Amino acid sequence: MYRIENVLVLLNKSQFSALASQFYIPCSNYICTMKYLIIGLGNPGLKYAETRHNIGFKVVEAFAKEREGTFALNKQAEVAEVKFKGRTIILIKPTTFMNLSGKAVNYWMQAEKIPRENILVITDDLALPFGKLRMKGNGSDGGHNGLKDIQATLNSQEYTRLRFGVGSEFNKGQQVDYVLGEWSPEEKETLTERIKIATEFIKGFTTIGLGMTMTNWNNK
Image (tube, rainbow, N blue to C red; front, side, top):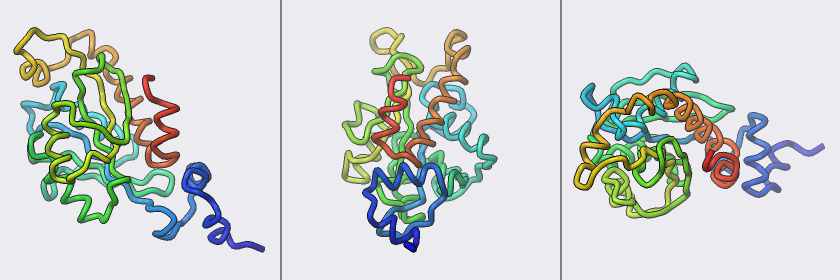
């Protein structure tokens, strides 16, 4: 009879992820890492809590609430730890302000020994219509200061990001006011639903992996 550990080493990464998404399977470091870092981008403080720029905070807060996790102030971030299908998921809301997000990301990657392929950054995106969700495994910062600092700190564009569309309904020169402004009444009507879908991306990324999550959920 074969031990399950011996069978698993014969699987490639995608096959293992598909199997592990249905069952909790302990794994050795050389097979997979069962710990993930999910970063919601935003600015700390009540002043920014309901702004478009803080949608990353809203998504990780919703996921933590669903998994009965609680955020607590820690080094460079508010942090919550939750479990999902055998994975340990560290959720952070950087307290460094948006333009220095990379400091918090790098600190918690090192503190929790989480590899770059197991981090997910959730950010607002002006280039996407309101509520549109799109995950990518790499790419430029797109002019987003939070992503720009993360890429400079990690010295790499190779990390997964989930872009949450906030639209671009502003006049020339009003971009800052727009992203730091609050949602319109019309947007608020469907915001909770869109945040809920964003949490499904987190579940997919941490179980079935980047490729299948993009296939299943992008542009939903």
